[in-house]
Image 1: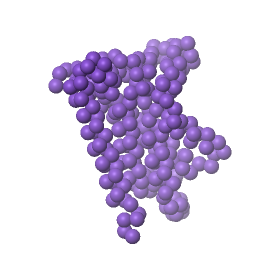
Image 2: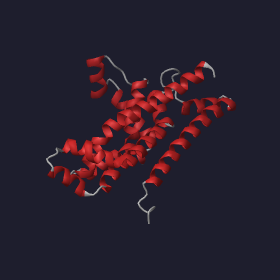
Image 3: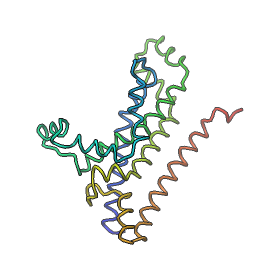
Image 4: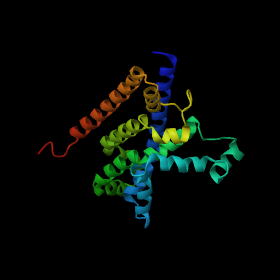
Length: 226
């Protein structure tokens, strides 16, 4: 394994792991709010969270680049306050990936919470437990299959990201070049052996994660005992 190949795989794994970790922290409370909130405009929030599933990566990538530009308030604020530019950096593609992969984390968690009987929360509240304690000690342990599914889907989606990374991060070796972009480069260079190595690794990881998802869901299938 040459150094460039190993470096690209390391960036890819780091990219997917960080995206997943950030989204599990953000996704759990957001999913709880979406599952139980009676906010009047909640459907609009749900639509915004789900938008990456229907929008082309180029659209989201374009708006992320616009936001990162120092000519606009977010990019200008980052530059003036922290002297940071996000375009064509690892941090830039990571933030874009968090937004682009959000529905793959939030929707399984939200569905898992909605499937729980209301009696679980009501019993916890009756015992004097706060909403935070109820969420962490009662609800979260009862949606473990949904959590595993959300983590696996998010990681698998992140590790195969192409369009959003190319739009926001370009193709910078050692910084933003992930395996999916490396495959494209190797095919363009007619280096099919190296492209196959990258592709086989991504294929194997995705197959493993999907197998885990289906195995977990099968064990918790309510129809299994019938």
